[in-house]
Image (cartoon, rainbow, N blue to C red; front, side, top):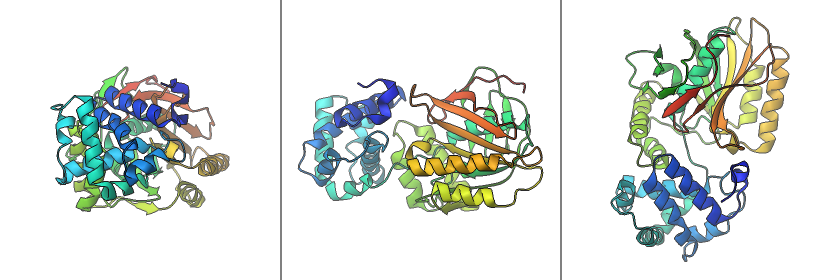
Length: 358
């Protein structure tokens, strides 16, 4: 198994599949891990899905290839098309040899249906990640204007583009409407974040393939990518879908670079902090767009002022440690990104590393 410094650069399919399976185990999804290991049997099958996997071009883990096909397999269970893998997810079937044979059989039967699941990366919208973003706003509110214009990259279905409508309990620090159907209460580790009253005056996002969460099929798609063992995540998708039906999030179909460049060119309201944010999405942004976004933020930072601050909140994977880290940078101070917290990839816990005072 590759060291963590190079996991995203893994090209060997067996190595990538085993790494992804172990990651699922560490995330509390042993059944999902067994199904992912079963993909090795698919590589040897005479199926279009197996051949495409075997000939994969690119970085298997960076592309999240094992999770793409795993979403399709879970979708078969959710739709009732083939529920046999449900026994694996529930832990009723644990023999890996039997699971390998079952996964291969399922792929052979549903080859044409499963093949398109390899076309794009997983839609990994997760409301639990907004806990870290909100904690970052609490920290920022002590340093810049507590009124925020929020811009999200890779918004997918816009679940986190509705974060201002959620109720949060962050180690006893509460924020948001108390009657919200979405309640974000992660296990909080370390000191509490600062007490503040942030105001999100506007929030919108972009995605190259937005998902309309108000449509039942879209909610089902998102659930397909959730590890079946995570019942709480499934419930959060239902809560987000309810809110989206009441008032859809503002998500435009646009790539990251174009969205950021256009957003930063718009007039900024006095007394409002403009915030770019994203969570577990940067690895999917092409290198040239990463460079364009970074350059656009650097240029905008030169015009930032105390009356019109700029900030960048990221909850992304540290490729050296594979920890999911919350970093915040803001201008006009121009400080280096501050590491505020580490978090569970799906928001189950947040470990606050920053002090409470500015």
